[in-house]
Amino acid sequence: MHICLVICRKMYNFAADLNKYTGMKVKNDRLEALRMIISSQELGSQDELLDALKKEGFQLTQATLSRDLKQLKVAKAASMRGNYVYVLPNDTMYKRVSTPSSVREMMQVPGFLSIHFSGNMGVIKTRPGYASSIAYNIDNSHINEILGTIAGDDTIFIVIKQGVTMEEVVEALSEVVPNMR
Image (tube, rainbow, N blue to C red; front, side, top):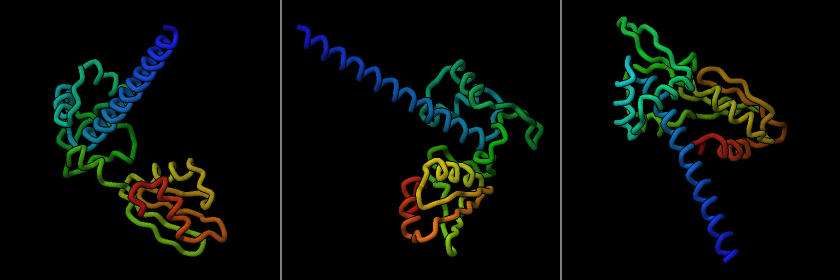
């Protein structure tokens, strides 16, 4: 009897942990979709945002949307047409685009474009707005082959340790930068 209680308790804890993880993943996916929607469309009401999220497969209440907008520090600003629309804080990764794509399409396009080397230096080209976040990921991964990075809007300068080959750098970066290979 006692062993049955222990097993049941472990199964319950596993289910609770799994539910917590999937719930967090859903929220992170929803927040990312919300960022993409706001950066690609001019929407001025929460009803419009809820409809756009629904088209992307997210069902949520107005209260949840309000909490998400507050967490993302979303504001309203005048558009070029004089309408007030939702905008993200001054975050270059989510600049408004002129030809909107669906969130799924935008999330499938990688930020990384190319990498080139000269001696112990490298230059990574990215899509506009992606360089700082990719450089941040590189720096925080503590890659032994790389001494450091400097990022602009669409370019990352990397300094490579003496004696490290280009192949070793690409191999190490491929663990951190999606679509590096």
